[in-house]
Image 1: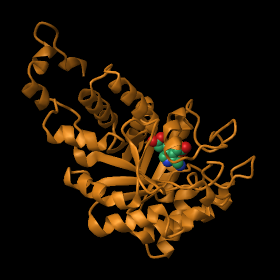
Image 2: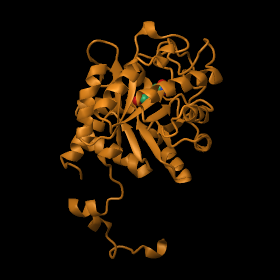
Image 3: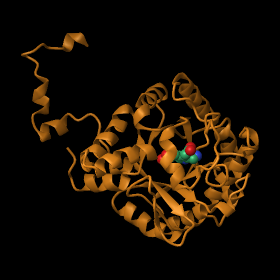
Image 4: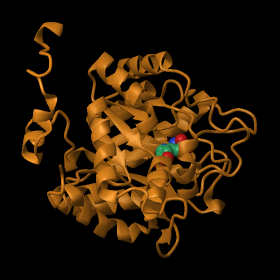
Length: 336
Ligand code: PBG
């Protein structure tokens, strides 16, 4: 490589930055609207409610999902992810409401699929919105049971697939999820339903606003989710997680959170060359929005910068609460 480097004054890298047109010619990474996935919160209440910890985001009703889905598709977005806010009286230790074909998620999936067939629906397979503890699995007050929980997750995956979900995303990050769910879907004739593995999901404080959004965190205990989600100190372990999930049949890998974990994203993408997504999580959104609302940051450039950084690090697609806003910015041609 050194042989190709010419020294100043022959080389002036600023020539490549001279104008917006030149800059766009040599641009290495670019986000497209169809790379973005919009997470949607659905409430059991009669009307939408604002999520205090996520300025600008609402929990919407099942009926409202329809208009929103149409709007998102019309601006060019191609995928959404659904998360429910379940009333406390419907929560129990086994998360049984997750298996109800009439629950908020299944109702919304059917409604959206009927009207906007091409919009890809990603359904989160985990029990945290459905258990009183807020844990992702069966919790006896001390431990979350890995192997008993997977039995319920298989059923949840199937119920969501039957409702019309395109991608099943087991987000509890525990052991053996991908292979066992794959087998369960296959034996029920859903060989073509995709599975996205939350391969490297870190136990993160950045999820706090999300837990507020789905009214989940009530009694996680002092270690919160550290006995199943990864330690933020580790990256070799993330590679092991990804390798296992690929072997078990994952179609897509995911790294989460996003911005503080771009090194993990990059390592996983470069190691496996596998479809790899990332999630700009609730806490990242909240941090950015707080600064935007105080005029410390200008909204459009900070959105484009953060999302382009995900692409540069190797993300094929990005979950982001800014998806709708980003689509508007890109459609208006304000890019560059
Ligand atoms: C639940 C789940 C979480 C997120 C997505 N699915 C929270 C958690 O693991 O506690 C976080 C998303 C976000 O913070 O935006 N299994």
